Image 1 (tube, rainbow, N blue to C red):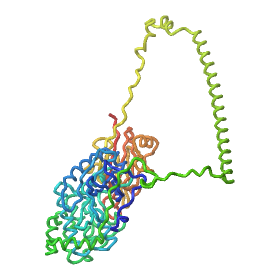
Image 2 (cartoon, rainbow, N blue to C red; image 1 turned 90 degrees about the horizontal axis):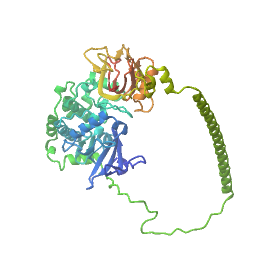
Image 3 (cartoon, one colour; image 1 turned 180 degrees about the vertical axis):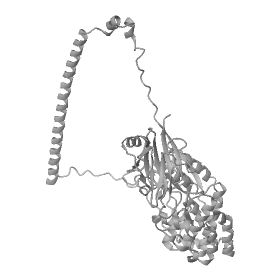
Image 4 (spheres, helix red, strand yellow; image 1 turned 60 degrees about the horizontal axis):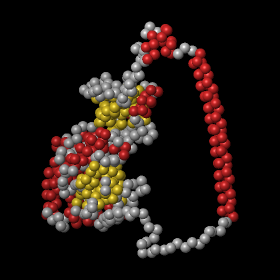
Length: 546
């Protein structure tokens, strides 16, 4: 796990060689927002370059959120965070660079070596809590803290992807549907689409620490809805955890956000449990991480600067090729040449036939055109001219032929194409509805909008009395104004079962009055069987005529 071959993947043919002057050395992985590469600063410091997926970059709303979140994330400075050192939200595609952490993620370390010992878990919680202090101080809530977003370096943990996940998770995904958070590490209020605060990250820290101590998620695995139901309706079973960790994790995992420990309290509690080792960083924390991580990670060297055309031989070995003359032709080679010649002759014959046929058709068509022109000229010579007709039969005399009649219709001015107007994060539940008109989101029990969520005891449907809806299948991101308009003209009104949609599903909507819209599902919570209200959040685009 800690060798270069395990952690670094060679660049693929489709990968760029450089990003904004950073030469890429290897692949590091991929996530919901894009692909991550290893690079180096001009001074040789390794950095991780995250390149945004092109389909996300095409969304103006994403770029605005990405730009805002990058500005906030660059202000975060903490000993246990991977700092954002460079970014460009206006590039094609957008990208950002963070300091590279030479170590595996917590999820990789546990998968390779098993659960962490209690002292390592305490050091882990203290470090991540200190990182949350720095992140929350800048007004950022991580919202997706989990083992794969905690990297383990030789001197302690590093929290990554803080703030940036907000930009991608609330944007219409067109390749893979991303959700706000990971089900196994969500807080109850997050699972119910409630307000996320700093306490939400503390709940995720408790779950992440429990994973480190157990080697598996505290609330188990399985379908997302099953896990979320356990988080919302059951208390965690802490009896499986080491006794030393149970009091602190109980406070972190309190159902009420107000009752959870703060990051400052977590740091103080961990230091108290570590005792003298908390101040002895030369022999405490680092020694534990070396035990957990094993051999030190070997980071590949910076990518070499390309030369202007590779030489066929090393510079120290100039060899003059020997001309051995033409090779003898074998019988098999003569047969291959004969077959190629036959194919070429046949192809040329077909092409010649087509060209002759086309030439004959053009000549016949030209002759017919000449005859039509001659007949039209003869007919014109036999009829009165427009000017003469106007002079004798028009009340205005010859002036009628000078220009268009006063009552003639004017040529219509070209209409402007509809403008896409984004509405990110629109929530539709059993208690509200959505309108194509402004305001799009009806709240407080208003069910009179164009789109509603109708539920019975077992399931829910997206329904409408004013619009037709069509679920778009195929390549994500293919739905646009033209496709939605065409499908809306032929589609019939119908209900779309909530069970048939998932994160990333694209739904075209056309109102009876002609307006066209598109929904991209972000989160779908179909929990009727569990006794919970169902809901979904969507990024909505409405094409409005200027």
